[in-house]
Image (cartoon, rainbow, N blue to C red; front, side):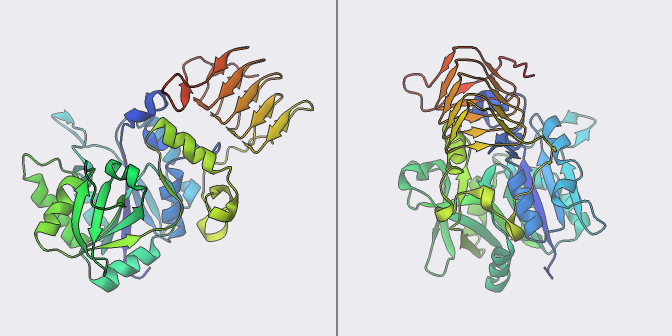
Length: 380
């Protein structure tokens, strides 16, 4: 890229709808697909786009996430011409204040941003599952002369009220924006991916900081203010695989998507070459499938041991499925143990959890997906 583009990944959310999975871990550090963390996706996308300067803005329960990201070596950001930085809320004499919103998180790091001397700033959510590069989006931003370009994804109308929604004309110029409305006027959802011209972003963040009743949020404040001021905002439509995994059900669904055939492009495990998703290499031993085990339509990752029956499930590394256990339509996260005779159906088993012998795990009435945690497993 000839123009300098700096990426800032917002990775400080609590993820409360993921319940026990985020009790002690930031949402972007939650496991996905048996071998990934959610944060792997935006970081890999940046690496695959040739972006050399990336910051990860952490906040809630950030220790594990900070340790995982480290210096960015897993994604190739530790070279002479590349940089990955962890940015946390500043410590002052008055203490440490959490970021008030997504825009405030960037505002509080304007000094760092200025030190990078960018032409453009890419702002990303750290908790979505998708594989892409940002080069074409940047090209459109520059060629259109936009002040801000927002990546958008067509969602089901039934789900539209969960998202910030974009209304645009036939030239992709954004005319209005709805933040999680009760009565949606569009099904074009903001993906939480923004490219700003740096000078424009800086001016609007400084202005927003002076407004006492602002939520200091891009969707609620910055974008509507720019539209009201007549700034040029355009949309870039993304038609690949994208999932917001903010709930137990949506996280389960995204894992199950990995089991689909590659013909619809949802199997992210097959992404190779330029768009490969990079992750921590734990150098685990190969998975072991016992002589009496039955595995059907499932992903069993390195380090897993399966002696029972596994159907249509995602099994993480360093897990144990004992003889007589039956796992179906479920996600078994790292370090979990499913003991003899246990049955797990339509569930997520949290990292390090024990499902006891002959225990039955399934959703309660009115619940789509069961989540079990807290019982500590001893594996081997």
